[in-house]
Image (cartoon, rainbow over all chains, first blue to last red; front, side, top):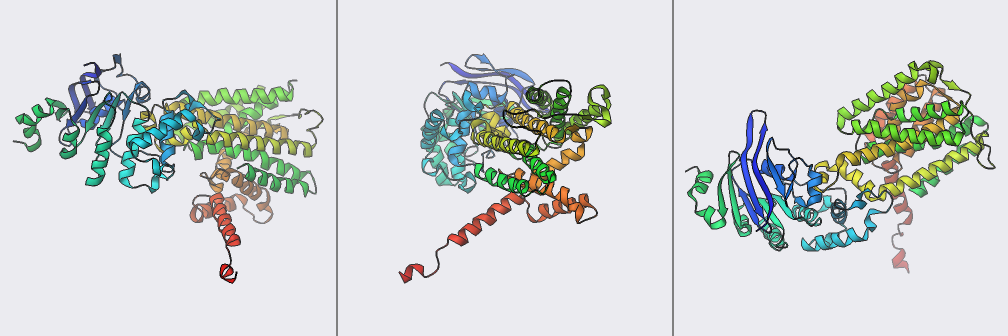
Length: 246
Length: 320
């Protein structure tokens, strides 16, 4: 299958600490890749390198055949790299629909329009309604985000990424802090995403993560130590070693 | 917002019409263009979350531009257009550097820029007249209106304020306006959504500098004089006071702030021996007891008043 994302020899240091070291990753179109690892393994740093939030000290990243490691996060987003954050980063003072509209306009040239009321941009409005329907938040469209429940905010995070029709979606612990009911709601949303979107997800909750994963990379101390299909990685004794230390 | 601007103009016009002499008319004119000045700063402080200490530089540069050109034979309207163009170019150039950082660093860069502009005005005597400034500025005619008459110039400034309120209202509701506020709240998220955070902040900075330049041009034609004091740190903090006292989160906060601060500075001297100390006390009072500024407090009071006036009387339904 065609690779949507290919990273080779990625390295990131903060001072003398090596956080990501020699990581190579290939994600095919439509692949569901889970990244596992204990705290401090470098998972979020790796995701930040892929999204452009951090620049790598070494290594290169290819996205649909284009080299992107020197591109800003904004340029990568416009190329089709979407992401969610571990800590909610929503526009709390705005309504649900306004949040998604702002996200939808990020991919439009009309984001620079200084005169047309942004709530009346028809194209973006359609995309917004569609994204809200996907995450089951359409009935709450006019609710202020600050007044929404945590689980609703998590789904809104997803809508913000989805409205831009990404080719690659990077999910950083999307289930963090959710109740079991909310988790299964969000899992349904993720499982129903279009098959052509490649997804790379970091998650600690094994129950939901394994339902999602097609392939898994296990990280430890900044390196990928095990990689393969779900069954291969689960069966690999090194996975247990990374998690249980024996 | 337009309704509020009209109400603001009624207040300003009230001051002007009740004027026993040109002093009050001049004061009302200043209220109008200082409203523009304060609103321009609030694009940075309230909308973009960038606390600038150098906004007076654009006000002053435009004032000098109009003063120099009109005293060298250039038509007044061309001079205003040139001042706006200069404000745009200087705003973009300085903003390109300043908006690379936020918080205290941004404040220091804008302060440094304003001090450079002030120093140039003070030292470049051949062009700026140094400490003596530039005098002999005349107002251009506008069709049948003679703007040299204070009443005509007041009407012109009042209409200019209305125009600026309209434009800024449109900007606020637009995609760009929403992006500016979103970058203030979640810059990292905005990058992840494909927005160039630096470019959006630069757009806000440039728009703010253009409207500050417009206010500076109007000030120059009102005062018919310009000196380095126009862009002193004191003037920069004065307009910042207007925004903070009025309320940065409110659309009409800067207008309220302009009225309060200008009225206070103009008339408090008649009642207190230390007007600036009194202004400091006013700021303290607002910060401690009206943390969001006067405008949101007025808004809440207005809503409560409206509710109490329109509430159906108890038992009215039962009586029918």
